[in-house]
Image (cartoon, rainbow, N blue to C red):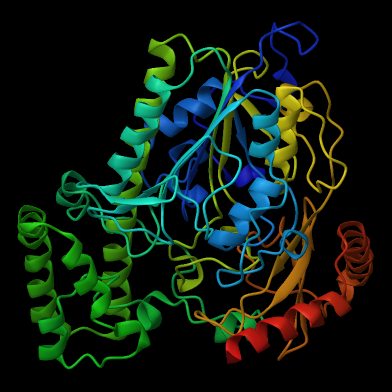
Length: 535
C-alpha cells in the first residue's frame, strides 16, 4: 500500500520521529485542537499524493508534523464515528451503533476528563449526536447534518440562525472562541466542519471556480463487482444510478420534469429546493448564475447521452462540488494555524486534522462510505506538535479513531481509564517506541437502511483483510491488499490462501474476544434495531 502513494515531503521517515524536546522534560500542559471534517476522503488531501486537488493548509500539518498512512475508523458512519472518538470505545460498547440510535452523553468522554483536570473545553461545528454536548465549557453546534447556507447553530442548547456559509461561520466561531478564552488555562478545542458532507454546496467563491474544472476518473469508476459477493453488488451507492439528480448533481426540478426524469427516493426534487430555501436573494442569484447554465446545458445533451456519458458527466459534477467544499475547509485550517503562529501558541499546541471516515470519490463507481473496503475504512490523519513530533514524520502503524481519547489524555497527563479500548499513539508518533498493534477491528450496523450496505464486521492487518457480511446473507471476503490494493477479487475460496484464511479467522476471533463482540451480541443488536424500525 505504501509504495503506491506519493509523498510530497523530502526525506521523511518514522525513524526520524524524535525531536529535541523529550517527553521526560517538564513542560506546561499542551493545548489541543482537534479538527474534524465530514466525509473528507484521504484521496482529496494533496499531502497523500493522489493529485486530485490542492490542500496547502492541511498539508502544513503534515509537513510540520506527521502524516498517518494507515488510519482507520471503527464504524464508517457519521454519528458512530464521533461517538467512538469521544469515548475511545467501539460502537457496540458506547451504544451509538448507527445514525438512528440514541447517544448517551452521560457516559464518560475525554473532554469531561480534561475538564476535571483544569482544561478549558469547547466544541464548535458538527457533532451529529442529539442532546446538549457534555464535557464542554462552550458549545456551538449544528443540529443533525446542519445546513450549508445561513445555518442554525445551537449555542449551549440555544438556537440561533447565522447568515453566511457554514464552513466560514464555523471557522469564525472557532477563532472568536480562541481569542476570548481564559488565557490562563490549557484548552481543548474540537473544531468540526460540516463539509464536505453530501449534498456538497460550495461557497460562491469556490463554485464559480470549481465548476470550470475537470478531474481524472478513478480506475474503477465502471467496476462490475464480479470479484466480490452480494454486498458490493446490491449496495445503492452508484454515482449514475443512485445519486440524486437535483440535490447531488444540481439539476433544476423544472429541467427534470421536462426531461421526464422520474421522481424516486434518489431523485426527490426537495433535496435541492430545501437548500434554496436557506439562501437569501443575493445568494440564490449567485447560485443561479452558475448552476442554471449547467442545468440548461445538460438538458440540451441529455437525450443523446449514453449511460456511460451520463456516468462521466455525473462524476465531474460530483467532484466539482465536493472538492469546492473541501477548498473552504482548507482555508479555515489555514486561518486557525495562522492564529496559533501569530499568537505564539503553535509550539505547545497539538493540532490534529482528520475526518469522521473516508469516502468514495468514484472508486467502484460509488459515493458515500459504510463499507470496510479501503476508501471508506481509511481516514486521513495528520498531527503536528513541535514539542515532540519531528516535521515530516510518516507513520505506517494501524491506528483507529478510538485511539484519539487515550492519546489526548496521555498528552495532558491524565490517567487513561481502564475501560477505554483505544491506545495512545503518543510514543508511536514521537518515535519513542515502535511497538504497536498488528490488526484493527471494524463493525457496521446500519442495515436495512439507505444505501443498502449489509451488516458486517472484519479484521485488517498490514496486508490482509477478512470481512463477514451477515443477517440476510452469510458471506465471507478475503483480500490480499499488497497484490490487490483496489480489492477487486476476494480470495476467500482460493486454495493458495488457505493458510492465510485460517490465520485471519484466528485473528478475527481474537479481536472479537478482546473488544467484547460476539455473534450473540450481533443478534441482540440486530433485534433491537429491527424492533426500533417498526415503531
